[in-house]
Amino acid sequence: MLLRDAIYDFLTHCEVGKYQSKKTVENYRHYLKRFERFAKPKTDVGDLSSEMIRDYRLHLHRTHIAGQGVTLDIKTQQYHLIALRALLKHLHKNDVKTISPEKIELPKVPGRQVEVLSREELDRMFGAIDVTKRNGLRDLAVLHLLYSTGLRVSELSNLNRKDVNLDSKEFRVVGKGRKARIVFISDIAAGHLKAWLDSRNDNWTPLFVSNSNRSRTDSLIGEDRRLEPQAIERIVRHISVRAGLVKKVTPHTLRHTFATELLKNGADIRSVQEMLGHASITTTQIYTHLTNKRLREIHQQFHR
Image (cartoon, rainbow, N blue to C red; front, side):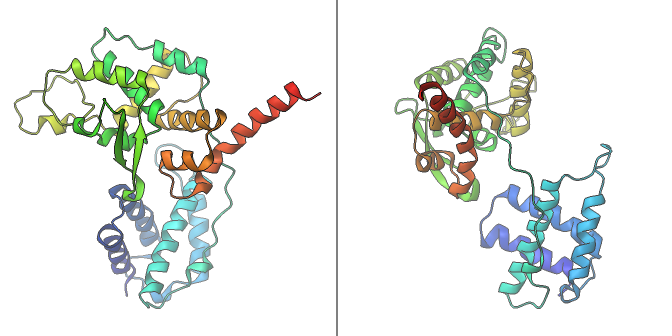
């Protein structure tokens, strides 16, 4: 089987066989196409070897990002190799002769660093939003909903008005791997979200929309105006700058802060895992070192 055919078959399986998200399939395609260009499309998967994998790893290590003058970081290199290993596992499962996926060793990466916001930094961000301005009510609702629920930015972007129940202050969201979970809204977040919805005079489907000056005659204008993840990231970044925060703040920073606050205030890790929608508790455990720090401070304060 030719490598390009194997990649096409694998991506098709990911999309319609495993029902993986569009983003996951796009990432696999991006990483595997780089390997295809390196190995040449007409390479037969039976000709893949340990030597070729070694040379590919060296190629990744030396690859420069266009226009940035830097090489791929170790985490990105790892993603490329994870995608290649997933392809090889798929081939082995279908009895296609090729190199064993176990031959690919993943590089060791530094421990993940989690950036969180203090209560004072959060308040500064909330206070930096002028609700009298055009997008003020929307941006304040976005910020509070991210912090209140721990939603991923893509999950927030995909929300529709009908999805959110402001009476029960809870709703269902479908996250990574099409895994559904229930998230809860604080009273404060619900109040800001209601203020944003009450200010709208449209019947568009998306919960959060862009207020650009485009014509409203297009029948698809409501969906066209959905606030995309990149736009939400810009909103959060601009608010943090206005608030005078030095650290880089993203929607995921608010997700980290949400999880850390829960653990610091006594929530058990399994509950936090469920609220974040993590498939593995190992992912949730990245927050435990932050709560351990708090325990150390308590020990130093009260132990004599």
